[in-house]
Length: 345
Image (cartoon, rainbow, N blue to C red; front, side, top):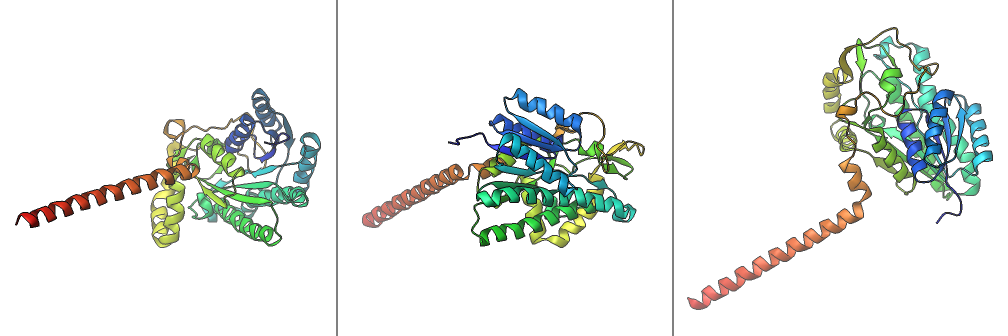
């Protein structure tokens, strides 16, 4: 049992998956350091956290600025205590063919989605390594293993996060550190990002099906933060995507070329004048969920099997032993019948 309240930092906590993650930790009694760009959304999520009985400190931060992230970490520890878990979950993207993007747009996506994780990881390590304890959770994606069209900058950033995390993991193992780092690879989630990210497609953006509610991802992050797992894949679609790309990458290229452009657009026309959050947060409280609730799954059977693998293994072993016993009994019965027939003859 812990002697003190667990202290958790969540970046990108103002909306979407980050907001769901913050609420999940609050339900389990953690004190939260909430980092996001929008002060208004931070106050909204803080109210939700406090309604769940947890303490929260909010910091309006652009994670592309390492100095801002470091100052946020200092204040969170000053007000809540030593950080136990740091969850990197901030992101932005541009839905666009690569040739239609500007260098500044590509750089901005990279600075937020990749360097934001680097800056958060550095701030966490600065505090965790001297104490020789703590966990860093990198919220990843199936797209860290298999890129899709129209999101080249985002996919590149997710691949970079995976590379950085693997290098860090080896460094921590080399020095014998007890600091743990894990990566949680997400499926498509029903978050508001499809209404706030920049979109150059003619129709409104949508997640590639199948889609899960963000609370599924939040439960996975909480579980991973308290295990010693190297990597966690959430949803069967994530596992199929990752293994499909390992086994048949050229086939995945062709399939995504045919399906993923239309698969990321609805039938509704996009408003080319709508605001986006690439450079500045948009106004309003977006919440955790997006507009795809009707098709979104609330649970993942694959994640349940992952988190209950001891029980699943026990059941599978019991069934195997029962099957073997049944086969042995059948074989013994047939042998007795054969011997009896031979005696009668």
